[in-house]
Length: 199
Image (cartoon, rainbow, N blue to C red; front, side, top):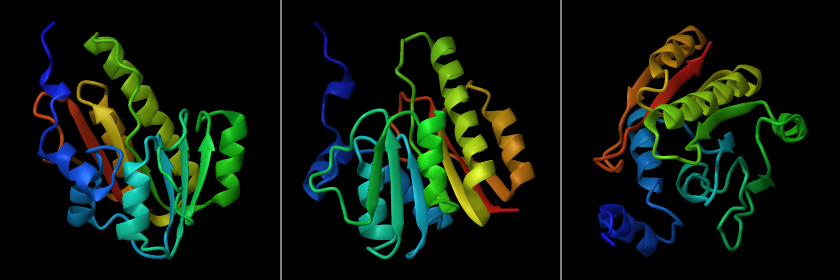
C-alpha cells in the first residue's frame, strides 16, 4: 500500500517533537500570533477543539506565560501530561447546552481560538460543509462570550462558506482577515479567519 506524504514526519512535525508539543499545528498559531498579537499575558482564553493540546500548551508557555487562564474543550481529552496549571479542560461538545453553560461560567474571554476540524470523509463538499458549521458555531460563541476588544481565530476549509463568515466577522470586529500559515501542508485546503478588536 502506498504511503501518503502525511505519513512522513516533516520539519514541523520533528520540531514539535523536539519542543514537546503533541502536534505540528502549534506553528500555525505561532505565526498567527506573531502577525496579529491575538493573545497577551493575563488573558482569559477559550480554546475550542483543543485536543491533542498543542495550541493550549503553546498559549500557556509562550503567550499568557503562566499569567492568565485557558479553558480548553474538545470531544477528546488533551494529550498533555501534566495539564498546565493555567488550564481547565472539558471533554464534550463545546456547542451543547451543558458544556456551553460551563464555558459561560469562565467567561467572558479576551480571546477565542479554534483549530477544530470535522472528521473528514474524503468528500470535499461534505467536509467543507461540516467545517463551515463548526466555524459558524465558534462565531456564535464569540458573539456571546468574547469581550469588547477581544480577538478570534477560527480554522475553516476553503470552499466552506468562508467569505460569508468573514463578512459576518467584519460586522463584529474592527478588522477581519484570512491567513494560511506556512505550517499548513501544501495539499491542505484549510485557512484561518482572524477577527481583531471586537466592537
